[in-house]
Image (cartoon, rainbow, N blue to C red; front, side, top):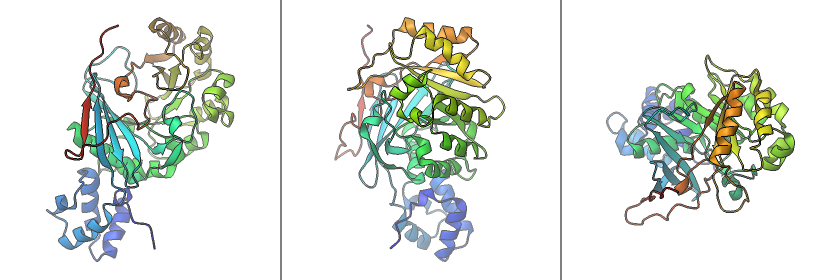
Length: 376
């Protein structure tokens, strides 16, 4: 017996083949695709205006497979919203909506600017990479998300926010390039003009340094933006922080970044999580420009966001600014990414699907709003 289909993972051509196999004309495939991906519908009845009842009945037997259920939402004092989804096999994943209502002098990444809304998307349940500073790593690897589960995060978050995200960043739970086939399929669905129609220039895929995956991503046309979680300037330190470095050391990783095709004006983003006394020295700041020299690049400095377990510390604001200034003195475009949603464990590196409240059996979804912290 074949596995049930996740209808939201099918391309227009595959949907056309599916509807014809069910006795309908091929153009019905386009209609269904537009409903699923252009409008992001959750219920078959919403297709009633132009999809025949017989086809809706056939769809009803398939559409529940791969369905995500939103069972919790947390709202940060800064407006960041963390959405916890439950998969069909009862696993939890998280997505994060990050509003940016005001332009910032320190904004140069994928999630800033006046009126922008960024959605941080997950690609796996848990993660197989054991990065020492990341809460998701403590979960271990559960499974890959299907393409339909990936795109549903965007459609559900859009409905929840009441507007479409302007930027999509694959920086949530999991290593996207460990799930390349489903990621690539999801990207194709998201940029399709019959669907959500996102521009690849508004989509960023972040990797811990999976070099073969970077090469596969480079082969996509058009390719999304590339972000690399670097976090160290020597192999000795990066080996300790990110075990993947033992297989793909810094020189190999940067060579792959240099081969990545960049559209006009695009840059490779290097994410650098600052860990006090580990990778935040002046020597590190002096080495980093040498590593990225000759590469169209920008650096996002991310003060470490704490979670229970590792004995790391966030550097002082003075140390962070000093690190940034050294980079800028060496003509490196560098920005400090202020923590967003850290009061609800929604900031970079904090997603572990364990801090959200249990679902309300009456209301269906629990929304918890964080209390603003007192100034220190």
